[in-house]
Image (tube, rainbow, N blue to C red; front, side, top):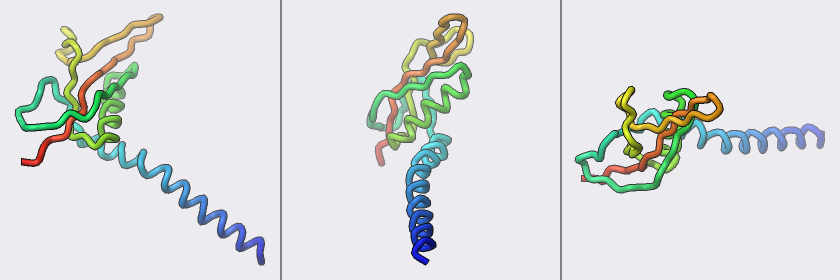
Length: 115
């Protein structure tokens, strides 16, 4: 009987630990879809939060990474501030190291001010 109670306690505690550790990651991923990527400063009033970066071999994954980091900060958008790539028209840095291409985005996470 005591063994069953112990197992029940362990299961309940482990469920709480797992749910607490997974929720922020899932929330950031969902909120990241709402983050806008801007190539210039917006006309709306905003506050700068912090610099964020995204890097990956795939350009979409690099964008996703920078959006997740901005979402973690509670941002509404990211102003990308690297030099514009002539081929894509997108503000990015491409690093080629040992034959591997990496897309690197650096930007300022911002939060719009309430009007």
